[in-house]
Length: 197
Image (cartoon, rainbow, N blue to C red; front, side):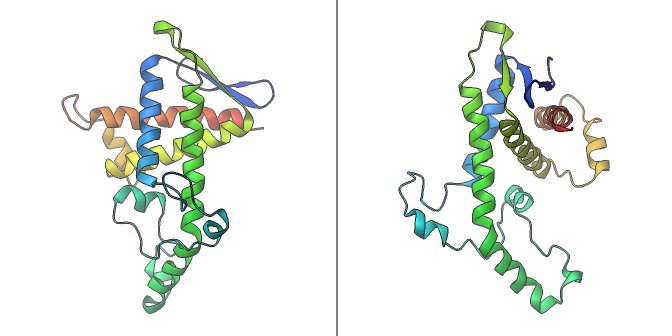
């Protein structure tokens, strides 16, 4: 089970993680949470839930490349919509959907942090993380978001870009990020396999 998810009875998944892997996953999930930001109620969570339900999201696309990848334009291809309507349609779609998208990504990342925090690490051996089917789906969403975030930082857009990552010399400062990106891809792939019927 080391390094990849395996199915467990009841539809969940399990993976053995050592202390370093747990620390890396937790750190990446926390960084993702910080990047996504607090919900409409604010960092303290003391908002008006009814008002939050009807709160409109931003109408402008984010400027950070990671957030652009996580929350892309609904009408990404300007050719698909006349130029004068493209910006208007994208802004309207973003205004009504981005808060919900952020909330979902936030919940998934929080599920990762909580499940890692609940582990009892046994020395150098680490621990076995066991997830229910629902937790597995949250993890899958968060692993996807983490990979998208790292891909944006590494300028990975197409499959050819990923192939180039394997050729980076060990002295390249991006190498640790590349190793995390590839490792998360392996975790994501094996988790998908456990969820397949």
